[in-house]
Length: 269
Image (cartoon, rainbow, N blue to C red; front, side):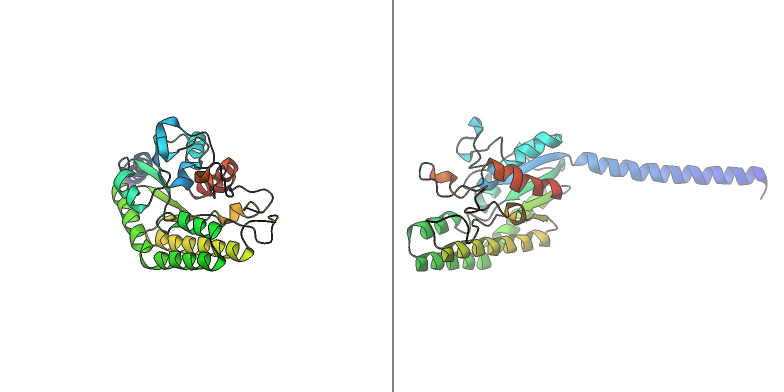
């Protein structure tokens, strides 16, 4: 091959490679640009109940500026932020009132959901006010619900998120264990009740993690970050029973949001 023809051939080849690489880079950049908004869904553990500094416009949803979604967006400045988590939310509430801002431009979704469906509040009320046998029986009922009904409800929510926000990275955060067994609490629930409640949290987390994985979502396990900061630990990041503000009972404090949930979302996002 003559030098002039060879030079022309090499030049054409390099141009072709350059066009291909530029096209790939452009496509990648487009994908990244297409998904940069953050949408925070879920229940009271995501809205920030128990951490104070509630946003007045959120009303009974009690969204807090100290909740992990708000802290994450303040640190990372997503192109948009939609904070829709709401105190008391169940899977049906997410479906009916929290999915409206999801779109192809959503890059990150976080959610905690399932605890209210499984009867978290009623479990704690029963275990605090009634006998050990009643507590264990109520927990057994909750576990049966987690086995029989909750998986289908989670499937519905997760599928809807994927459908509405196909480019999003979805982080499903779990729930902490509530008690340090053999800890500093001298009164209150028996260790049998505390251990059963912790076991119920593990049971729920396992079911949520399994469903999240099945949808290709990331499960954010907060049990490790809350270890050493459970109720009865001496440095609790969870409210115990709050008689003057029942709604904050057994919810993360501001430290629980910033030290327990936020690092898990940051590491998973």
